[in-house]
Length: 421
Ligand code: EPZ
Image 1: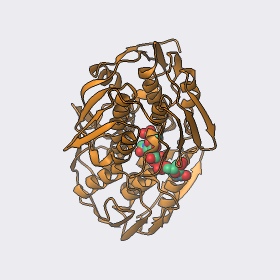
Image 2: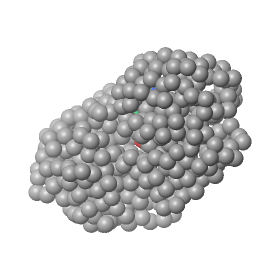
Image 3: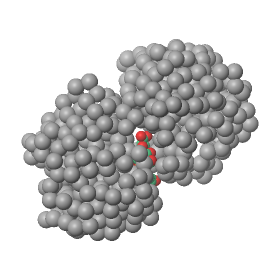
Image 4: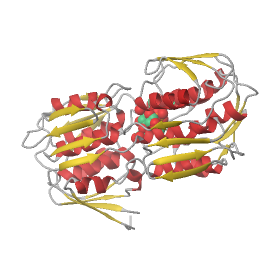
């Protein structure tokens, strides 16, 4: 298992290109199952969760071809509608194949995902959505078995905003008979990117980027091409890396409009941030970081996927800050590891209370999940001395060559293959 070795205290400087959004790709790839032929997803990030999702739909009979960052998916050979446990357990987003398979083939057998590093992460909203569209669902031996002669449009109201269930339901409703309304739909940019692809494939969807989506089912869809949006979480992570090292960087190929909440918080913490077209620049040189409270919420609020990285930044800010996760109440496995670097963080219910300390000092720290590992990298970049971030396979799931991007910005970070941990 690989680790990163980081010599901290180097201010980041320079320019970096943001990759395509992992959480868009993980919905766009299964959407190709809704038709037969070659769908092309440009600006697809080359990272492990995308490779896992590609492997899953290959198992279903599709053929995936990466040309640079263009992913071509040929679904003309799809002949299997069963997503096995050994693939689904690696990545919860595999549940995204449920909707397209039910809609196109009337049958799907998808392993239940099980838990993840920080909690149960149920899929009840996905299952209830399919039942509302007329599917019969049985749970047998850890598998979801769905059948539907023809899905029927319905009105579904989510009690809470859910990215995955909104995406799954969209992919089922586009081929259902009749009209579907999704109330309290997720407005995440990744869902909007999915709607762009579905519309390009011939789907009839209105209410884009609003909490009420309306879908008029069609008989069939055709292959299409879409550009994957830039990854707002990677962009915000890199901006935070510049802030925690008192650096000054520019990111290109990103979507400033998707970064308004993290940018507002970075400005509140004292950084100078500006944007122009598809670039965002941050100047945090010589600033004294101020403590800033955050409460995560669905887009356009502060993303839960930036909660861990924000805690790392606040660990060396002057004052005390409270970071509350309203989406995942137990997503704090990074906190004990950050405290090994010398931070002073305590947890109370679904909040982290962060008392800023004058400095962090390097140590061996263990990644537990994707964004936790990103926060440990940020801690290492700020710490005096050497930090070893172990089990970076977690990080490789959701960032494309992060250590290379950070090195190009001046960070002293190297990947050591095959660590003993
Ligand atoms: C997506 O997960 C993202 N993953 C997550 O990013 C992100 O943290 C999350 O949305 C919230 O923004 C992908 O897009 C692949 P949800 P998802 O359904 O769809 C509860 C990362 O780091 N819930 O919006 O699984 C759930 O437990 C990953 O890139 C149910 O109760 O999230 C959570 O508390 C981590 N039942 C809340 O809803 C369900 O059936 C929001 O979850 C589904 C969800």
